[in-house]
Image 1 (cartoon, one colour):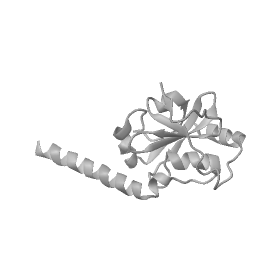
Image 2: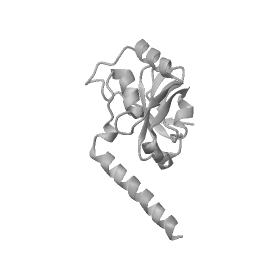
Image 3: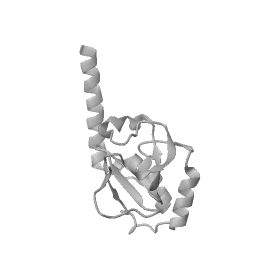
Length: 158
């Protein structure tokens, strides 16, 4: 069963931050245990670093799923980190707009249109992602591509 990093229960319109190991996946709570999220083909609950190839995806699907299916065994928390900076949209607006997008294919770009951008745009009307704007992202990309390069070198040596 999935575990929250806190005892806070999500409410419709809340953002859910899911810890996948090397990155965080984001979803929007729409009530009754369901969330809407932007999912590139490689994002899989519990996959951790194996989902790193979402960096290369150019398209993603907007999915409506249960929170437990999206989270799997990963830890998660309700994240309202921008509530002091921006006025959140009303709950009805967030849920309505999220539901209207379910089943659609959307452009995906790790730097400008990732799952965090998607979720925060629904809540605040602003597409922001701290994951791709700070020094940790540079470290993440460097380590990811060095790891992929090393794996390729080992493969070619065998």
